[in-house]
Length: 459
Image (cartoon, rainbow, N blue to C red):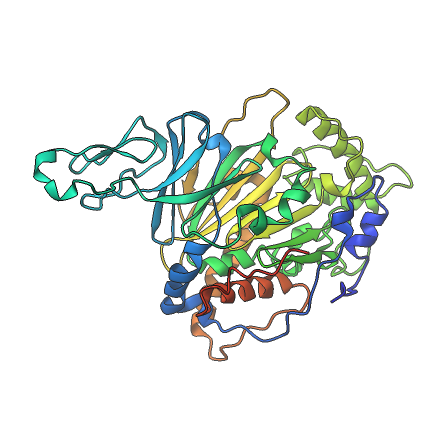
């Protein structure tokens, strides 16, 4: 399936006019015909469908659990919980990372209820204690447990994978390795070096919507004109490019520095830049002014400005980096709930987790800044904001955009529950990532337990 020709210039045509060479892998088209069958709203509202996800999907997928900067020292651990499971992701003395099920093997109490540092994991109920490597250290009143002689009481362990400063866990054995699962993400991000980044802000909010509906709000730019009209003056929403890779990874590239084709009338290049500066707090400094030289486009002017600014900020030579890579939105999605943005710029990372049921989601937003060479990476603490609070109070203009999405999502959930039609219709191209997502989910939910392992290779 070729990239459809919508109104206005395609992202590829904008990239071809870039002042620097755009990486070839971004110019490639990775699309295929996924059909046009509607989705049943019950996928988002039915507790039985949710239970099937918890049984067949979540234990078999690689999940982003932590960033390396969250546990810099031996003994540091991160509590990661999702879909009824609880893990202690722990830094070992040799620098490796292991993940143990966070449950006492005596009476089932959680060993820890928050992240931190520990020289041992002692249960607060009766005092059963484990070493940081998961081996049993002490049983109180050992004489009263003769039945445990010879029993292996090492804490059960999950698989751990690491890439680009991210730490992943996977409960069940089998299936693709992390490298296979993420492909082609590591090859794409090698140029952007996420391992040099650190968490500069981290905010979460529980929203009354199914986790899939929350994630899907960030899989297409089709909604921009109706939901985020203030950014249409510098966002080529329906010019976005959509790529599908294998079963687990897909991508939207949304151009900035151009006018949305959904707007009638025109704008000067200076007006486009002015809108960019007014409403995009991710890659611009609030209150700054940038004049577009005669004969230059807004994209080229923004590219030149950001290339120089980020080179100084990151302590790196960015002279060969394209205009697109310092301003456009490269929104990757790794099935099922991890969305890291690409590019050579301060980036965004989304994660969605059911919290705790079919109708609620913990949505987390991280901002990643770049550490200069030799600079120690730190991690901003996680802030869980109340339902009545706003992302904008913590994330500025990006938070304002997110709150516009939050205004939609609860009504999406209640609307699907009330639906009589029982059919959700998707655009064949602009919403192809959503269909791709559901077709992968169906492979995990299939009765054949090997269906999810036989992933289509990334192309």
